[in-house]
Amino acid sequence: MPDKFDDAAARAIGDAVRELENRSAAELVVEVRARSGSYAHADGRFAAALVLASLAGIVFMPWVVPPVTVLLDAIAFYAVGIVIARRSSALRRLFTRQRERLEAVRTHAAALFHDRGIGNTTSETGVLLYVSLLERRMEVLADRGLLRRVNANDWNAALMELHGDEAIGPEAVLGAIRALGVVLERDLPADDVNPDDLSNAPEMQLA
Image 1 (cartoon, one colour):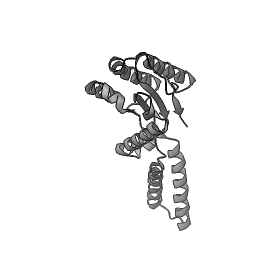
Image 2: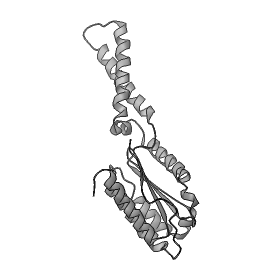
Image 3: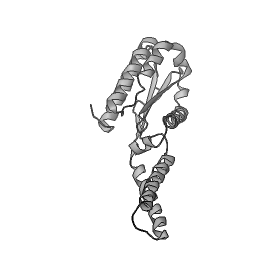
Image 4: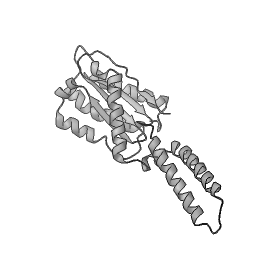
């Protein structure tokens, strides 16, 4: 299995979705995003911390520098800090609270559930598996028709298994599909009328 989200991973995930839908009445959509927000505030926090460190260095230097040097130094370090933070998911995680990241993922997942028409399937059995890599979070949203038919305890237990704090790769996504499939294939088995309303191919925006 590929260790990164490339064309091979997309094919493997699409095959797993197709297999789940052949065995159940669910309509699964997988969306993989690099992040769920701009995190400009995190970039600013890191840049400000870098400026503070540079000013502390100037204050404790054994020689005096012109005031304009202090101003230019702050501007330069802030700009450098913004550039560095924009290139680092680790820094963006460090300079945001877990609650901020969780809210960003949930808000984005809810918007995608609506925008992708997952709540408009024939039997109201649409389910979104949303993967946000920077936040290291997988979020699942399901339509009411599906939630009425699955065992609530088993479904919630399957969702809990998806939540961790490790980096997410293609194998983790495939594992999540398998975990959801155990409940869906048992409680929502495929019947004679099993329309394929939504695309099986995952949507991946990794930039």
